[in-house]
Length: 103
Image (cartoon, rainbow, N blue to C red; front, side):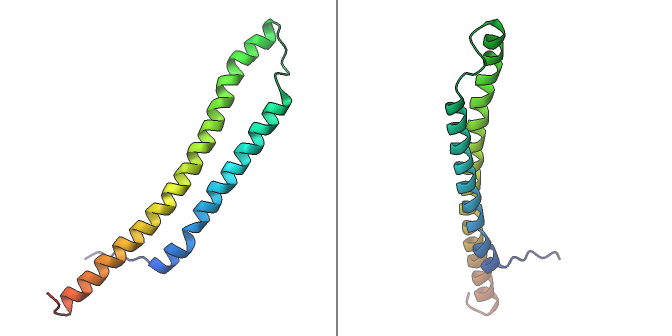
């Protein structure tokens, strides 16, 4: 028989690190966006500048959106770790109760 074991206390203790990662990502995104805005359209308005802007602007927006999405994933992962710990602990307690005659 295979075993599944986790230390729910360790999982709960480490879960907040993902919140910190999310906050770091959000801060980095804000810094990047601020720097990009401050720089402005430094590529110019000639044909070469327009060609560059046509490729750069959508890509830069995708990068910013991707960073925000990654921060959201980190927050969701934190919630999932807490829920998993709670569920695992609940099932473990229920099984222990059943094995000790608490049916």
